[in-house]
Amino acid sequence: MRSDANTRASNRVVERLVLYARLVRLDRPIGILLLLWPTLWALWIAGAGRPDWTVVAIFVAGTALMRSAGCAINDWADRDFDPHVKRTQDRPLAARRISGTEALLVAAALSLIAFLLILPLDRLVIQLSFVALFLAASYPFTKRFFALPQAYLGIAFGFGIPMAFAALQASVPAFGWWMLLANVLWTLAYDTEYAMVDRDDDVKLGIRTAALLFGRFDVVAVMLFHAGFLGIMAWLGWAAGLGSLYFAGLAAATVLCAWQFRMIRGRTREGCFRAFLHNNWVGAAVFAGIAADMSF
Image (cartoon, rainbow, N blue to C red; front, top):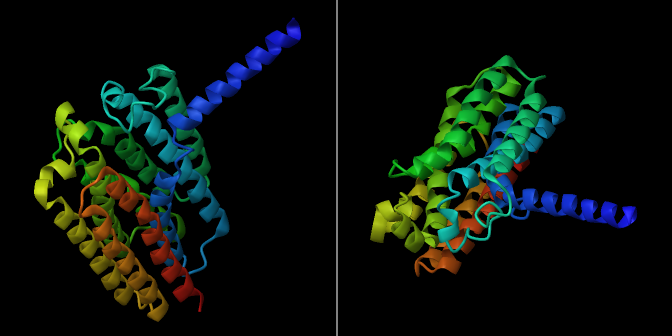
């Protein structure tokens, strides 16, 4: 009898952990990757191609933790909307398989662990971390009143950039802020694609997104954002004296961005979501160019 009770208790714990893993999207790591690539760009450039590996490990772990915490906060903020959206109605909080309090506790625990990780780093990193936490916690609510919440998300998703420069250079040069702007434009591109997936549901719920703001010009807006992102990254590469390998990586990213036009021009849910996922390779191409160019 005791053995059966222990087995049931163990199964309940495992089931809970699986629900928490789904809450923070560990089964969908694309969000971690989209945060991680810009952070790695900044670490490699700030570290002249040879960043401290301890700092890299801290930022990789911190990125995963804060993205996960952000997902928990987002689901708590959207707990009354998600059950009515096709893509999100099966999430643990939307399906009422976990409580709102549990989601907030998960977010708080993950944020605390991320904060403890950066304590050995420069004081400026710690100061910037409070800004990063505020951005991550407040983003979900911008969809209620801000016509372009993707711009706010771009700042939140790219804040690892100034933190990376602060960690390795104890300051954030203008270069770092320009790179953050490039990331905002890139985020506007891929998160508009993401918003195009939920367009019909968002209209019914009254949620503000870039896809609704741009209307029939959404595809044009996506491509213009990509162009702005790539243009700034090209200028930054030239300003930093990066060479042909960097620009080869940027050329590959340009081809990948252009290919997304074929995916989104029909505005189908499947095509737009596939284009959103495709941005992982854009970030990887830029990083490959930076790492290769600074290694040779």
